[in-house]
Image (cartoon, rainbow over all chains, first blue to last red; front, side, top):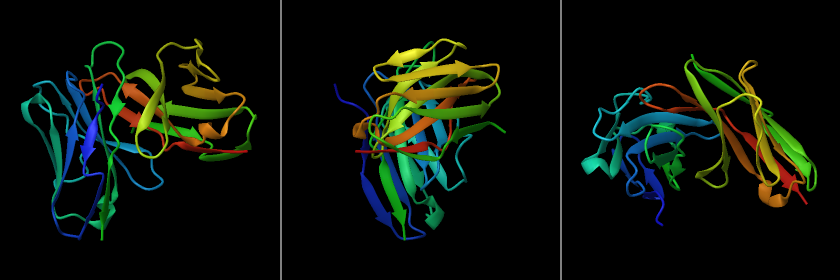
Length: 115
Length: 112
């Protein structure tokens, strides 16, 4: 079946511009996660959506970052007034739920380059 | 502050060698420890460990967790060039977010 998809796969933007990154989770998965991987770093948790609950935004690095999940499915991560330190691969993952053993399925990521 | 530390950060071996990758953690409200293999961009799931001392195996890969000493190891025997990747260790916390705290990864290179 179809996995997690993300778009665009690559994005180059000028410093100060806003960008939107999209994630389509696996159908039926209620949990959706955004991570960021900067060069040479491990994955960094950004935000988590579970069903209709309020999202956990505790990993967002600044108020320039926000995310939405419409209709419990597609999610958009928005970065306003991008900075060079925002350059990273942004990974989205989804899972069936949070109760019991679960596995997060990752998308291919969006490579963001801020010039 | 939650911390997951992997070692070594980088490892280069010859095909056929056996490697051991290490992951230590200091995390409150531990639920499970997971290993991922990352080639290119998206990590793929390898193992989930919740109980101490129980080895999980998948082909040439195996992993074990020590919840007393707060570490896990990932073993790969008879390595192949296709094993070259970044191996990520992550700890899942018991909390509403069920989020993962990742280590920085070990870059494994298998030379023919």
